[in-house]
Amino acid sequence: MTTITFNCPSCGYLCAFKDVYAGRRAKCLRCNQVFVIPDSDGQKAKKVIPPKEYDEPLPGYYEAVLKNSWRAIFNFQSLPVLIFIVFLTVVKFYTFHMNYAIPFFSIVIYLPIGWIIAFFVYGGLFWCYAEIVCATAFDVEALPEISFGEGIIGYIATAFKTLYSFAMALFIVLLPAIVFIYIFRVAGIHNKFAIIPFYVLAAFLFPMALMIVTISRDLMLLARPVYFFTPIKKAFRHYLFLTALFLFALFLHDISPIYKDVINRNTGVIYANILAAIAIQIPAIVSMRAAGLFYRHFACYFKW
Image 1 (cartoon, rainbow, N blue to C red):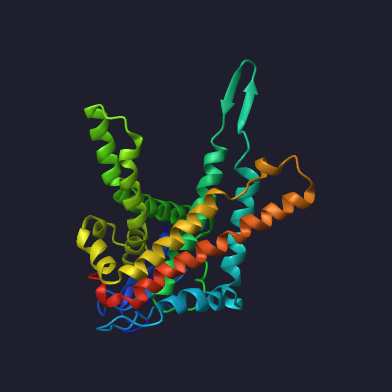
Image 2: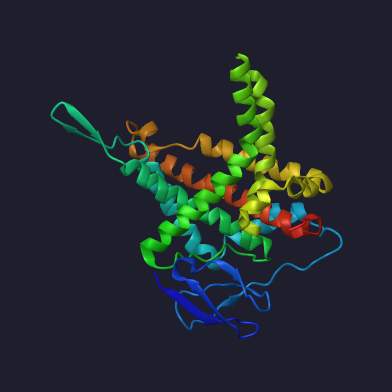
């Protein structure tokens, strides 16, 4: 692991970061300028212009989500990340049904290849989702550039950090459900419907948790309830719309076809299902942009 040194694009202060952080956003210790860490020594760091601070929310949230998102997704600058998402989706379609086991005499040896593929696929997809949220929050009207630092090592590091952040966000919103499941078991309560409201609460809070981990990148903020509920309370209708988009994207992901489901069908049906799996990524991207736009339009309500 090496160190990348470069000058702050604003004040010229000499900055240094480990190479695994290449392509990530960071802040200058002298002037607090936010920038993207370059890939090599001496390379110019790209400035990140923070959203303007307003005393009131910006208008046009619904139009920005439903109309402007299409221009942001389908343009030449967004093409590399779209190709990357399509590649991961196709890999997921063809590989997630396989039985990774080797018979050895009377013993079956199970290989971790399936877990490895899942790590690479979901790590890459979740990284794209996280970067879309963050880039949109900072007024970027296109999908973000792809940069994983030093090859496969940079990809692994990025995938691990992204999956960890998503897992922490999911754990925090599921914590009430986890606690009450434990209490119900101790008390001998076996009514599975009693826990449904806590799952509904988790689904409702997850978009806000995702904004916290992807935009602020400070996982400690997940432990501060005020950061969850203040923006939700002050922009409740818009947040309900955001949650609906997330749930719709999640529903489509759950019904997304894989090769195992159509393996005995003709080639045309298989290709149609591949196209359907790819098309399902569009609502997922729109929902991530909606989260970034929620922060951009209602930044005055966020305390971080």
